[in-house]
Length: 131
Image (cartoon, rainbow, N blue to C red; front, top):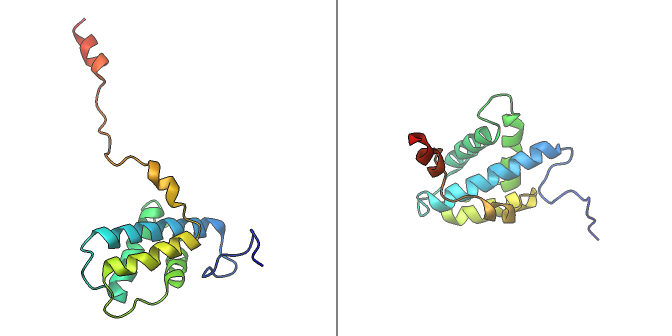
């Protein structure tokens, strides 16, 4: 019987929670990218590895100090092999499942802003300028 503190399937033993969390976020970003950017194009292993590297770099604060190599290895192990001839949108599904297995909470993403805000003075501030 599975217990609450059992290690999720597909997660190597001895992986730090911080690495698992960053890997889960990177996988969610990869899944979103694959599903929305040229989804019908075929995906190969090299393109996938490069995309993983880019998203892990983003998750790590666009810095080399974020343990990116370890997180990238974790991501690639969690997903496994890229099947020959698979489309990007088809492969987005197992990538999203791997993100969930690593602990990514898709419901938290439901409340994010879809339209970015542009910093600008408030209308009240503009109205008070002429006084």
